[in-house]
Length: 404
Image (tube, rainbow, N blue to C red; front, side, top):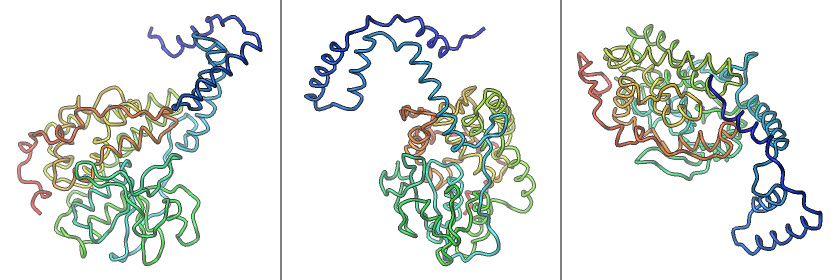
């Protein structure tokens, strides 16, 4: 039977004997001396006062069990409250992703569209990749938001590119400070979730769409009149059914599956989600042993959708979202497949690993209260990702993505 270290830790605290009680005058005298010493120190912080008080109360001993139990109860209550807002759940504690509010309806004017993204977000990353591959950079300008301390999207214009990749920017379309302000400019106002990606119509001054799959389909075939590579089709008619079939597999179990693991609010919900995630990864590993891409030799939209989750897997999901059964680097075919896509011209420039890691570890406070960002895995390093992948041998012809 395995043991839970957190439970063992709490139980041991209950056995700690508190130090002899000091007199009230002794406490006041010691606290005054400690504060005077700290005030003379240029590094004095509020934590210094807290450390001084705790040393006086129980010296070098561990905190008493009653304090640990109280803090645990308070933290669990606060965590539940924050998670209910961050990640709504069903009755079993499983994450229930809110539906996108704005969907594409009718025709759009190509010359007035503006894209809003966040670099940490895998859903927004999809749109950046298809925009780049189709040559829509000039036709659809982009503003890049960064996560603020409260988790909302802000325009800071700081940070910069990582090895030539895209970086955070100011709001180039509306001059707003936050994405919430941009959403609020739309007709009728808006007080819901302000998510990325979001497609904005500068002429209508309104939100067009905030559903990533709608946007990448539009970029693929709906803007060919202004695209630099109109001949490239990432969703050819003969493969549409196969693309949709694969998407019905990877969306719930992988794309959203990692979030279902990380945002699970019960052991039952986590166990179910992590099992479905790794069963699907195992299936993909087997399929990709004999197929260069999900639909054979053709790189398609569903490959884009899978890639943006895979590139974040060892960086964030394996650790922060508790997807710990295996690292992606332990899947030989999946990791080579990811490197193959990363090496497609223009794709690497859409990947900013610093922003990705900051966006998860420094923003999702309920999952990482200390905001400490771990070191980047060596297998996610830019140079490692450019190592030969050897997947050309699986193609019977040169993939269309390399012909334009």
